[in-house]
Length: 440
Image (tube, rainbow, N blue to C red; front, side):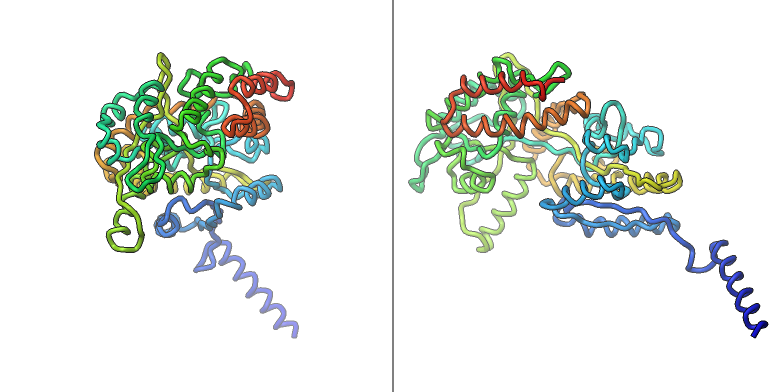
């Protein structure tokens, strides 16, 4: 019995020694956890292939991923982060509240890749207070759009607008033409925009010389240029260029009106709208969808006379986080995965799928966008006009977000529904902007 016990002990020690030396298939791999989202329709399939290729080249690292839902993913991540157990990599953009947990890791001195291959503006949007916390997968771009058939019917030189931009007055003059009955007898509008949020006002404010709502000096929406933007919006509504019921129009209703030839111009759109429209045209031809075919024209946001045109956009990608007990070796492995998931091939496939400007030099040489030539050139021009991220501190960013949620959205709803005049809404902005809780 004693001999058997000794033999068992020796055998166990030998197995431990073999395992420690990395013998056989029992070699332990470092697990890097990735939380992401369904970035586009084929993304998960591409992600699986990408991870398999990475693990083949890096046999000591195992990548475990989870695809979160857009509806619930953010809340799930916030819970994990606040409990001190975030994934190693998370898809998003750096936020002040992430930095305050001290679990968001700066990567400035950890990368082995050449950052000059990436678009500078896209990289800027992955920084926070001077440090970089992730790599961009794509640069999103918010644009306005037009119905090509109607634009041509009314002799609108949309090519010039795409290449040179347009002012509020030029937009107003053209949009006024579109306000009439369409061929089906339905009311057609010169401009349709969703009114359930503050985005329209934000678009116009940025193009009226106020690029950021909050700066180090405080809230900037107590400026007369804001009342100018609101007065312009009310003018569009009161003259029937925009629907009177704009306050109740959401993104789905806006898109429906565009498809039904009830909008000459509309917002907000993205470059991918071109591909979406073409897919819908094919479904109409195949008898899968009922409706009338149309072509999408990508357009810039108009700017006030004398102001500089700016584009609405930013970047999203993979951010690096650490758990409370992670060592340097694990962080280094996570950086390797980060560089792979936001590398040239991943960027090229994602940008091509979403018809977004390609933000990596190598990817730009290999991938094409599913856009008409005119829309592709317009998108490239607009991408070059995207503002850098707001350079305010995370504390001010939190106050800005609170001001938007508590003041801007409900006040704009009152404006667009006719309950407030531009002057009354402006006074609300000024009064609240002076409140201590929104001050630097």
